[in-house]
Image 1 (cartoon, one colour):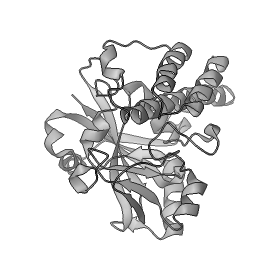
Image 2 (spheres, helix red, strand yellow):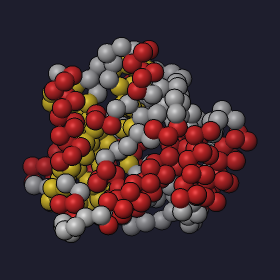
Image 3 (cartoon, rainbow, N blue to C red):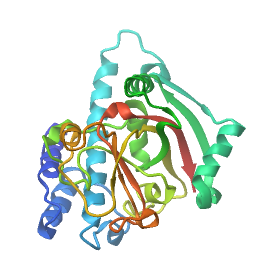
Image 4 (cartoon, rainbow, N blue to C red):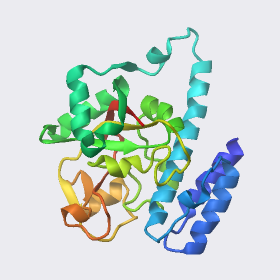
Amino acid sequence: MKENLIHYRTCVCNINYHMVWSVKYLIKTLYAAIPRRIDNLSKVLAKRKLDFNDIIADEQELFDVMVNRVRNAHDLDNCSVRPTVLEAFHLDWRDVTEEEQDKVLSMLKGNASQYVKAWRIRNRRTEERFDRFCQQEQLSEGHGIDHLFHGSRTENFWSIVTNGLLINPDCGVQRTGSMFGNGTYFAPLVQKSLGYTDGGYWTGGNTDVRFLAIYRVATGKHHDIYQGCDTSHTKNVFQKKYPGAHCVWAHGRGTGGTTLFNDEVVVYDEAQSTIEYLIMMK
């Protein structure tokens, strides 16, 4: 398993998304390193160059999830007294209140009919880190904090909830697979994030239910992008190029952009997000 993960990481970090043969190589080698069932192959194949970014970003998240599962198992094995699951991962987890449910449904907008259930989740570790960041940057609710969607495969969510969304440091200074560099990706519209859930555009397969999350995200001062991409961004590179900016806000066609269909938001510090709701959709 360790050798597979090292090989997988190397493939993701070295991919050149501009070249078709490079992405074909990615598909062959990564699926060999981490095999998975694919019910409908056509749904996971790129149909245009722009699709390469989403495929590689999805593979990177799968790698992060697997690494953290290995680390968590090791940490629990070293505990002298076994805590409960929620205690071990510093989680508060409950059903949403009626008021919270109304908030979730209003954010889902036209997709509200697909709603099944939601939970309010507080990861105390990531929330404390998030609060410190916002205090330091003088951000507050309605003034630099947005509530945004993040979609992923169902099997990824336990690691995402317990560890937070991680920015993989192992790709060095440049992560060429993601359209706006080495950060964590969110969307203000649910349609974008649903594409990364089970049965979504990028994951394929058939499922009765799927999951996505709403995060509190410290977006602060935006660097707005309306066309093109920049895969060179890391936390340090981004700050050197755009001092004081907190996120890339890439605009879709509905808000003046020409490259993306829907808005995408990217932050480059793990402290800039913490989970708020986990949502089950049909």
